[in-house]
Length: 620
Image (cartoon, rainbow, N blue to C red; front, side):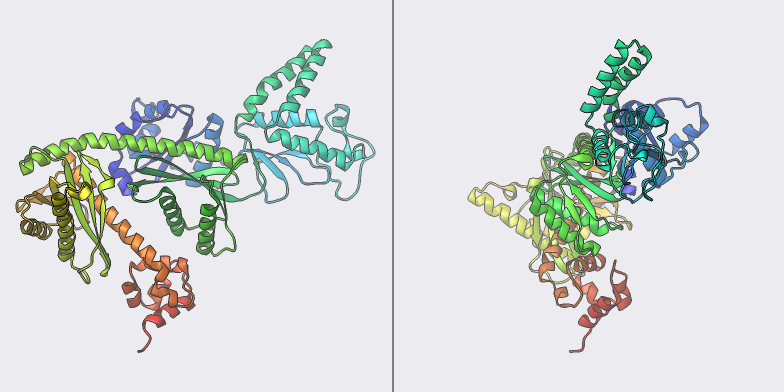
């Protein structure tokens, strides 16, 4: 999480806030949520914390602790009220606890009795009743209950007919024409439940019949000169659309589920997740995937979803994905059955109802995250151009259009792979990225692996130049960056000398925490100031080439799973294979592991752990 804080510039992020309703979340230096708030305008509200003098010391103290913020866009202020409440109850932020009570928002409940009742409740139970809500204000709920009773005469009393006992006289609600008195058998269960179905339809958003009823009552009251009653019906008529603009959800039973949507542009994919409990969004997560140009969208989307749930701690039985393809959804479902050890996992594309509406909100958030990310990228590139000027001066070059950076990835000598990332005029050029399977090096030998990779790359450049071929390898780099120190630079210079090529080489030196520290050029070490543009530029290139190499390494591991030696071990299926390799990194490491170390793998059982140990340690 610390990486989020390193790259977060509060002043820059404030400029990008949308003028939309939503909930904002404040984090401290430990990336812990310290405050959750809501607003009809995120732009105005969040900015006010940083651009105003606060009369309350508590607010001023909180602002001084804010290191970054996030926000979730919603459709209206009512939704933000509910979401704010859910996030506060889940996270208990330091600066919210004293300001918020712990009451649940109320719901309308239609019971499952022979003659159902309409009730106001604050708790959803796992029963056969139907729940509608939540309602941020009691007045909204009471208006809908009053309308339902007035139009459809649904009872709200405490009487129970389950024992077969009925009354001799009806209560006052019958005389006020607010109930058809099933208590005295004045209406059959069939006719009464027909009215209940209409009530459910109304609470689900179909208000045509109720509007017609209100208009008729208003006209009748007006003709009878009962103007006070006519005004009441008129006010209800005006308010009915407003009531249903507030996303009243029909929550049929207590459950939790996830929603997954996405947004993409050029070479960036955003994946956004809503975590929902009892129909209410309690959290949002998102992931940014850059430079997936060499992969099909469906492939990278599938891989990202699978990786998310391999690392997710809870069991989720329902997942709704914003992708209408049965084969895709079915493959995800089967994968998750193995991950969660369930006979079935529901994975669907929502086409209507609550999930459909929630998915639209999630899609808005994914689009907003993408817009913000691309805006950040453009800002970074302006600073990168300044960094390029520094490098031009350093290597005494008038032109620095193409920069290439190289890295090797291996774990215990398995799947030795190399990667080349390319930056053109300060921008990532992912279409020019290349992967190398190291063929001639056995075991761990970073220098030899780099030499093979550079030799193959430069041989291809020479060949393409002679044959007048056009492609990424036909372009000569203006600068080569090596992920390493003097030894790596010397390897590159040796290859360039063999090929009679004159290209400047800079080594990217890391500290003991594996973070960029400085550079090696012309056999001279230059330490870089963390706050400079050149440091940020080279740091990001180093992180990018490392990410690209690791991803390629993992993709080879995943492909090898189909023919893995682990398939020969009793009790090891696809999910356990993935978890074993994710935990240990390689087959070589698994071979050396003890039974206790194997048991530390997530959801590993003793029998399978012993089978694995015995398989690799059997006597020959």
